[in-house]
Image 1: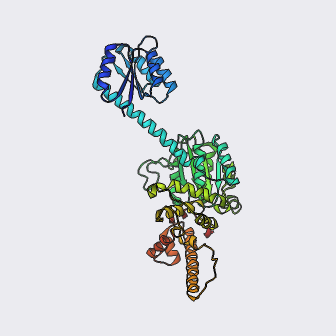
Image 2: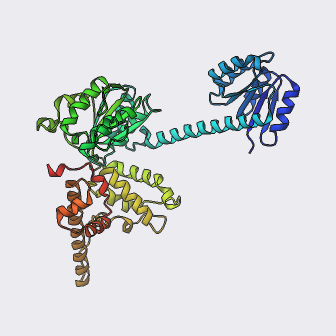
Image 3: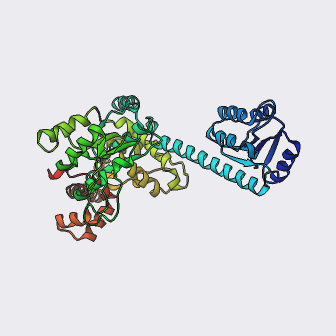
Amino acid sequence: MKRTILIAEDEEKMRRILEVNLQDHYRVLLAKDGEEALRLFKENEVHLLVTDLKMPERDGLSLLHEVKRLSPEIPVILITAYGTIESAVNAMKEGATDYLLKPIKMEEVELVVQRALFQADLIDENRKLKEEIKSLYGIDSIVSKHEKMIEIMGIVRQVGESKATVLIEGESGTGKELVARAIHLNSPRAGFPFVVVNSSAIPRELLESELFGHEKGAFTGAVKRKIGSFELAHRGTLFLDEIGEMPKELQVKILRAIEGYRFMRVGGTEEIDVDVRLITATHRDLKAAVDAGDFREDLFYRLHVVSIRLPPLRERKEDIPLLVSHFVEKHKKEVKDRLLEVPEKVLQILENYSWPGNVRELENCILSAMVLARSNRIEVEDLPPELRGGEPVVSVPRDGEELRRMKWQLRRKAENEVERVFLIEALKRNRGNISRTALDVGMDRRQLQNLIRKHRILAREFKGDSSSSR
């Protein structure tokens, strides 16, 4: 379908030349003055306006202002004579996309038109992308009917407008980063960066450089200047995940940085000012860490301006059907847009499970079941073994063969549960590092990886977990 170009030009010969040269590729509307152009603009879907600067009735600048008021993203190209080039430049400051000088050259017209439409396409694509991001990560992406979660969504809406620091507490997998993103997207900073730093996933010796950047030659290997996360997040939001794992020697530097939003790069001599909104998260009890001397009290109270505690999934079981529907819709492209049903029996099993990995574990479970499903329904056998083993035994064996089969099933269930707990605790102790975990438990690395795959555990999810070793 051809896109529509509206040409406003009081010279009939010029209108005709533009029409003849553009009509092969575009639908062309012609107006002899600004008033007629404005009427045509209101009556048609116009993708580009080309207007002379000097016209009777309503001039090009007045037309530009009115069109931009009606449709701010419409590209506008001005046509002007050499003597009024300064006016054209001023008009571009008012929102024009480009300008053409008389006498015009058609090769230049075609190039400027293509460039203006391409730029408009990029703007439209960027707008749609932002809307998609907001739908995926904004406040509407938090799926819940639980009273506590509804209260949290209200807090997210309230704090979005402010610059107050927010501390999000909760177990791994409860959606702390999702809430942080929702706060960012619900704020005036939504159009600026959302920068994530996982304090436990970066080696201690590199963390200061990651946060504040460094100058060339600041230390061995610093071959060029590096911009840190505080600087990258300027005018946006910096999300420090697992703040409870932050080394004490860095805690004081973070405190100084957020008190005045000024810092120096490693090896630097000049202070840098930034405008950053800080959100932090932890799976630890930070107040207990303060009492134990592991976390600075002054930093704790600086971060604790607004506190949000996310409940684990086991405390909001009524959300499981909603979350299941949400994840089936979210991941339907993984199964070629098949609309998979989830029977009541499967939902009951999901609701009876304890979900130690919380919402993240539920999402991984649903995605896995969708991929494994052999029909348009997720059946019990499509669920991971640890969930299938959770089905209650409701019958008494009728004969010796059934007794042997049920005893074998129970042994398998017990073995699977022991293996899974063993893996989770070992990975937690070693922060998801498979080589270190294998050494810790005295297993061959390949053997450990096979066991991890069997239980569909993602080692990277434990990079921030080391609580079991404390």
